[in-house]
Image (cartoon, rainbow, N blue to C red; front, side, top):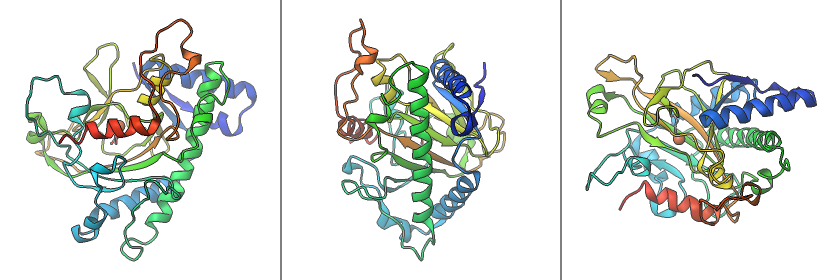
Length: 326
Ligand SMILES: O=C(O)CCC(=O)C(=O)O
Ligand SMILES: [Fe+2]
């Protein structure tokens, strides 16, 4: 059981037949695993590398420079720098009610930004002289990932034999976000004790996510044939992108296409006392804020809706609040 690597060149330069074949394989992988892996996609490898270089520089900035950019969890949507341990993804899927007062912070710091023209939740940036080109790189990365997600959403709709715009008519990427993560080095024992994780098991909240892999492993996906156990996501190359089905897609399809549960932990093979640091680069493709994220009529032939109607903004706000307890 391993996630196949699909050649996405059919989407940019394939014949109608090749496109159809790709759409079928994409949907098959997303349905089976909740994940797909692509090569020959349209986000340039050089841009991914440039973005990785920028994020490594960002997290090295002194506290005094990052501090004014601090994310305010009360804001509803994340913007700017989240300090290590602030986000507690333990609350998303791991809380079975047995532990009354956990303080299970994530061993990570992050930075979030959205559409450059977002007036409702404006981006915050370091001063240009502190990190030249950072904002420009993030903006270009934002649009490049956004374009890829729309093409993938259309391919998914085609694979389902639905109106090709069934998903893209609900998403212009105006509410989508980039999330960059830095996982500082940590004692192996601390992770193995199980009170701190890099990221606890979760599904992302948007429609689909793109994760650009780091050479340092750690991303794991749930083995659906053996729920509660996880399989390391193999690192192929810097040309690969991982696509993850997220909660909005699960809701729209009334559970037909289930979100991919994943976590970030220490590399399995790591036997050093200190687990090395790691970075990751994620694009959360999200529904436009006013759009309903309840089940779509196309997925409700004879079934009862499994999810309530909510706007995408209400849903995102609710889910974000869940991992900032108190
Ligand atoms: O670090 C990774 O590989 C994945 C990160 C992730 O799951 C997230 O930020 O939601
Ligand atoms: Fe995630």
